[in-house]
Length: 392
Image (cartoon, rainbow, N blue to C red):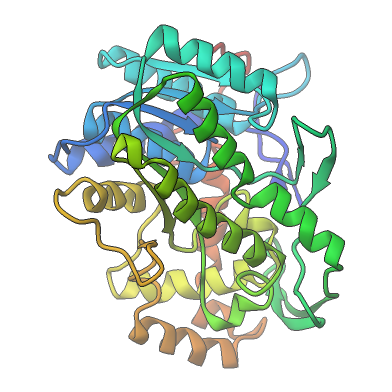
């Protein structure tokens, strides 16, 4: 099959196995290229391990700390007329590289919210890892079925309290327009917290503890975002922000529960990046295109793997972990620097379809978006006939 990108809205419906492998191998090469091997976690479970920050966490854990891993994700294998999802190909490439390097790399494909997958994961971990010293929870999902009640919840991206209007961009055409989002109802807010908050993270830690799979000194991470004022109404002060508040409270609750293990739960606030999740949020792609230009010019730009490598260096550097007043690890510290955000504000006030090429870097956004699905790499021959049926 000759595979080309097929983009619909903010998703790409195809993925390229060779390109995804190139993407993974570049991240592995970055971690190896730092020349640093952290004395950190050695047995790691990553929930949401196939793309974005979760994938980068798994790569940094294995090749930056020497960790054996189990990864959990919800991806689709190839069929007769469809490619697999990018996360499927990413995982295949990671597993091959990790195993060739002598590490345990096992995976489970299924719904992380379900009791069935939790039980299957615990069984696999007992067989392959034993007690773990680190859990990464990196799940971005549109809906969740509660395994106890059977109720299904759906998350929404909406402001809270009042309608919100601001600029956004059509990533494919480069046209800047205004977008207005109506406020969420109380029920939509509740359901979004149920999907994107910390309830399932807490259930996973409890299940691991009940299965006697937590090692002394166990740490766990979940990921969040705060962002600038221009995105607050749609993100931090919107429905997703309500969920992230719950996530942060969960971290505090888990830290208390982990005291018998000398453990700790953290929320890491990460930088705005092109991910499958962020591409779906109005306003954010335009902000990222401006941010990228500014941070690249200042030599501050990082991708997922650079963020996760730096985060683990902070987490496992020895001594007390540097956090903000709310106990969060602030990996967005470079993004939120005053000089960076001042330039963002100035550009935002002037941004339009006509000024975007000068004030933003939409081309970098498009390139990184294609990379998520294995496209846009000069080293890959996209005219070559490839087999989409890659096995895990």
